[in-house]
Amino acid sequence: KHQALGPGSVLLRQRLNTQANPLMREITALTAEHPLQHMVTRGGHAMSVATASCGRYGWVSDAVHGYRYTTTDPATGLPWSPIPAHWLTLVRTLAEEAGYPGFIPDSALINRYAAGARMGLHQDRDEATLDWPVVSLSLGLPARFMFGGPTRQSPVIDVPLLHGDVVVWGGTDRLRFHGIRPLKDGHHSLTGPYRYNLTFRRVQP
Ligand code: MD3
Ligand code: FE
Image 1 (spheres, protein in one colour):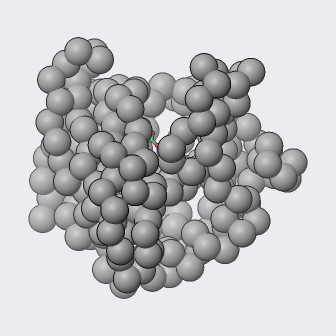
Image 2 (spheres, rainbow, N blue to C red):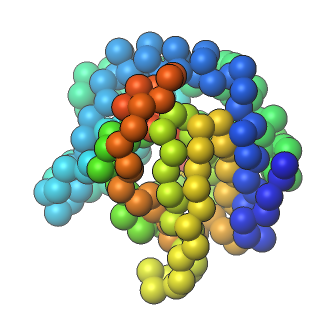
């Protein structure tokens, strides 16, 4: 049930069961207020993944500033919506199961993948603290996750991430390169033609 992916990372296969439906309803409600956007990188390329956030800090990018965290949604000018209370409870429980008790995220990123969408190898290092793990929840269509190492050149292992899977990434794995291979098309009864990934982070200590 608990599979170690690295020294600090735990895969909780099929961990979400009855939670998946309410999570999807809340994603729909949140993204009605804060529309999913194809963020533009500093290089001027639109990402194939569509993104929105909730929590005190939201992750954004544009051609001028590149990646950063903001307290307001550039698409609406409004503060990001709070992370739903039941998400905070769920994520604290999941982190604790993986060996990280007391996790209170201040940012939740909603990523939506359609067929062909991908995320190139990168590190997550925009957070002011790296002491807390990243918790990721996968919903809908399956994806192939690339789990690399400390450098871009490090070898990569492929990990399938399926509907209901949870991964907690922390410790020495927090800075490993990672990405998502282009999504295959398909249909899922809950999410239709999409994969959704929720990632929870602590941005400020
Ligand atoms: C390993 N998202 O939003 S989640 C991202 O499925 C991101 O949307 C992917 O990478 C997605 O930055 C992968 C799994 C994940 C997230 C953060 C990590 C794995 C990680 C940080 C460090 C190591
Ligand atoms: Fe990442």
